Length: 297
Image (tube, rainbow, N blue to C red; front, side, top):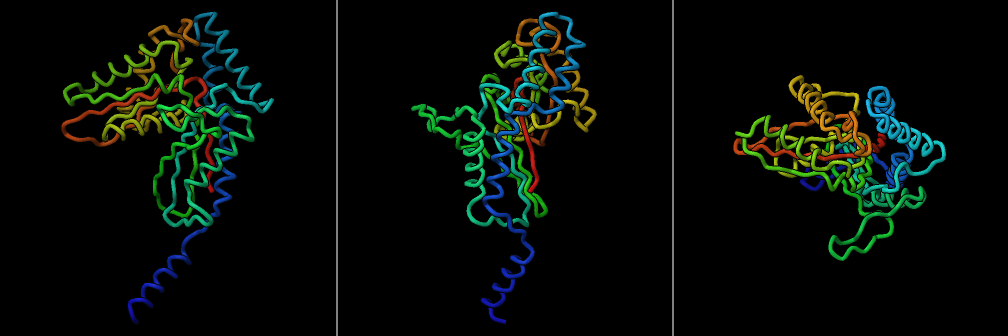
């Protein structure tokens, strides 16, 4: 068998084992997820707000939590955005290595879905084409897309619109290894205390520790996708999450920043191996409308 015939055989075998997914199917799914995420508050968040009404000691705080929960119910019932800041579309994609996209690129399909979703859902367009010239793109694209190649022949898509009242309160710090876990705790608490009422509490705090500067930031962002009623599977990290939630709620910022017990609904921490000379830490703060919707194709 000559080389050309051999290569043709490999390609043919690969094509036979690849699952094809059409460009339009991805676009349709992303469109629906953009609308769903902005209209329907995740059940774990809503349950946390309702539980907070029982735990909150401040009468003002209880009223705020009641109004936030009612706002979420109205948004779902009337099919309208939970919040006027419908966010920049952050999309996490787990792409099965045995998938072939037919009819266009995956990035184009995602951005077309965002474009349609924000148009059909009457969602505010909040993206500018250049950080200095500040001209609105008019369709909330481009999305920020994170890819992860995984085994299998499926595509998992998570759309997490991120408002910037809370995003602007986030940050990364390159700690020294000698700063240790106490340095991590101090940085998390400092960021939340400095944010005060700005991120529209009660908040969800995503924390990434390890990797490099950008890896820590990505870990913190992905941490916000974890349900607020699910703690880390690592006992050390679980205890740290619980401790930081208690410390944050001891700051007294409270719902809407008007004082009270419930400042944070959850602290979600993700970790990753890092360099011997570093201890990167990222804190990504999210408001009481920590939105995300997922689907598998």
